[in-house]
Image 1: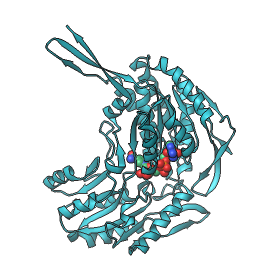
Image 2: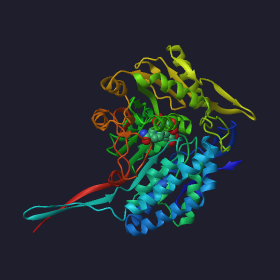
Image 3: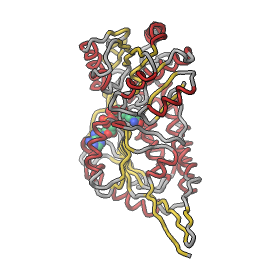
Length: 478
Ligand code: NAD
């Protein structure tokens, strides 16, 4: 059995209470590791180490911090195979996907923010008799809390800018997928990251996650996860006047006009619907298609989806791997049943898959549903699995109404060759990220985040560097 350890004050240690949680391999349903079930005593140790380390880390030059972050990026790259296999084992995603997306992006996060900090500048505001300049100083000890869907990718997306700007960090990965964060702690030790600068604490969200959120010494919380948990974090952290950044759930629309580049749209829509088993916050789960194209799209989309191979994550030909956990698998299946009850027609999929030799794994067919009203629960609530609905629309205005008719507002994908329409709609779509004729095309310098119940604040580029610093104005009269 693999034992995962906390990373506190530069050392790998077991939780003080000796308690652990099971970690399950979703591809076969078997327990394969134990992860610390940490509590406040572990956190207090970590916070005290982080507070001490802050004194020196915040005084370290940007170049010095950059050097260490870039070394970590290189070591992630050098350990690509091991990290990708660990990620797949924990999460159920195909290994090829972890190798081509998750782990390279984790490395890119460290490299990007390692380089960005050497270019980070502040402003000056001149008056006729004085000059103001802005200092951007690190906050102190900050907390990061991340989900299971892109484990190392999102874990490092928060840690890298926090460290680059001179903060010290208490980081909590998802208890469902803790392995790659554990491997990262080993990399940080080897890379020479000074002790206490990054502390990784494992355990249950409602326990150790909640303790991090309410800890007096933790000055900011950067969270990615569900809207339900984001709300609970806001309830606790806001009255304490902590800085918070919340990246939460979505129910993203995918709007397809008849004038789109059809083949590119179809290829991309398969990916934007089912990549990572549909467990990407940016997946488009409500697909709206202009009436003249609807029947053709439906036929081709259903046929392509039916041919997707559900398989074991280690098989290179697998397109749909395992769902991350039994509770999540049950939740997705219950939503497919709900769609039936709400009057939807399952065009393809809709069933669990019993994979030969892996009968206890958590596999679900990619599923397309039609015939549901916009207001029904299936079209309003986040399912976060390989399940999409398709709905025809008559004109631009109707597509906008359908798309915006949700409490969420993370991203939208728009398919049209009409540039005026694309720009017109981009202004009126209520979401933080809009892709036109593409999907998940990421430039790490751009602002990332959602509106409405999908998010508060922005990550990425300067937004992240600003979030993890406090602006202080200094005014000098001549
Ligand atoms: P989750 O909210 O259940 O858990 C996320 C993290 O929060 C985990 O580390 C968990 O242990 C922790 N947590 C749970 N309860 C807590 C509490 N009371 N206090 C503090 N921390 C707590 O989310 P999940 O199921 O791991 O991930 C799926 C969700 O994440 C989906 O809703 C998805 O849309 C969202 N997500 C959003 C983005 C984005 O960028 N907007 C990206 C990826 C995933």
